[in-house]
Image (cartoon, rainbow, N blue to C red; front, side, top):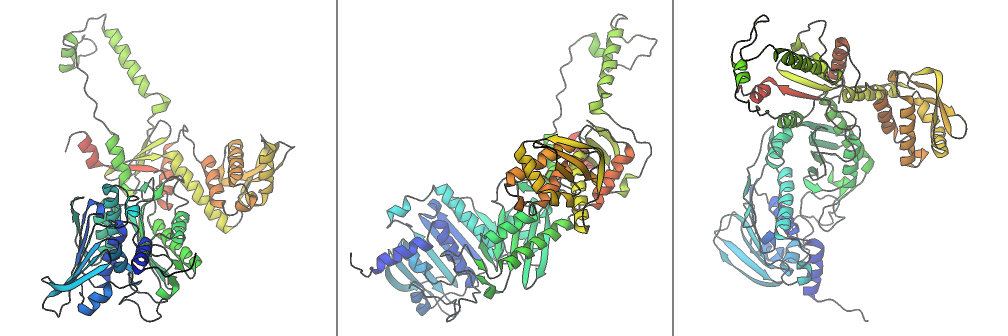
Length: 606
């Protein structure tokens, strides 16, 4: 087949296929144009998920007749200097959005600059231009897109339901509103409930805008990010590890005011939270990166959703450091949602119906003395009742619900986590501070403390070890023994010394001193499973934190161990002094704090 020139209408439709993926893409392009025009208020109206109607009204600079006519031509823009692809400081710059949108819809643009008496309106119907004609309007621009993809049925049938497309538009507007806090956004239409996000300015503008969009509880359960290095500035809010989600839908990334989905930033966040979250949990965060436009290429994708950094390693390292410092500043703090979830699980028991009769009256009258039978109880019935009471007390004396009285009284107001009052179910410490009840999971808390000690000792050099009186021999499959033997040099840095003991066994001669009386056999089997999962000894160095985590789990205070009062208080004091102790190495909370007012509400005192 001979080569031929494509007609303009087909060229525009092909270009539209690259730029206009779905209604949300149209909204993104048009709102970005409004932002570049200096708009302080942007109203977005949609119908039928954007397929029937998209209307963007702004109060920006507006366009005169010359600019209005050029705006719908392909590759025409006011936002890019000649040959200036290495210094892009605007959101929209490619100059093909309006022409592409007009090729696959009914498009109208009305605009009025500040120095004009009235506006002008231009229409494009399936690529055919009409106008401009006079239009009465305020300063700014109004763009209407109707019947999107009506001329391209093949594209229309691949769109999702109206609800799904409307949700995609909402997500786009959310991200643009987060990045441009000083702009008032209004989102409404026949396919949605109206949303109004007033402009936010001043010192707490970031917190206020994110509270508007993500929720008021997010800033309360997040740490502020403020870090810069080598010309890269990182800001925003990072959610506490215990304030996590089951997906990444609540992660927002911005580079120079542009919402992006970049693998460098995604990888940096995963690395920063690796010590705190299990693999199926994801942090909530809004990350804003500012970098010299010359060091980032935003022109690698038609919709500008992806970018490329000149030095991705520097960006990754800076983001990891920024998040690490922010999370470190949180100390042992856990999210308030942990307490809210705990309170929600409490239920006031319904009082059982008391049968009418003499026994009911006995509970309503004053208690009888030991020498006088209680009214309504016969002497024959009384021993049975006493036996029931004795059995009831024995249940509370059972080891699984043991209340450990403390030998000394310490003022509970002196410490954030308070002072231990009891241990229940041989795993949970009950403590009291000045205005709250604190419940601590002793195993989860000690697991985090051991992990942090491991990391600190490893930074200072090889971890001290202690010799086993008799080497512990662990029987394992031959391939597991081989993996452990190959990883000996790394494990010895962690204070674990082992050697091959026949074809299918490993002898453990020394273990890390800080593990104390650890479950050596369980630890070795767990490490063998990890090495098998990673499938390469070369990965062991990279997985050092994972190995430490496995060791910490086996060396921590186990559930079912009784603790003395001084041991419990020592654990609480170390938690207060250790960063990240509010969550264990799997991302679960280590303690729950219930305020006195919350308890009073549970009992109906408020």
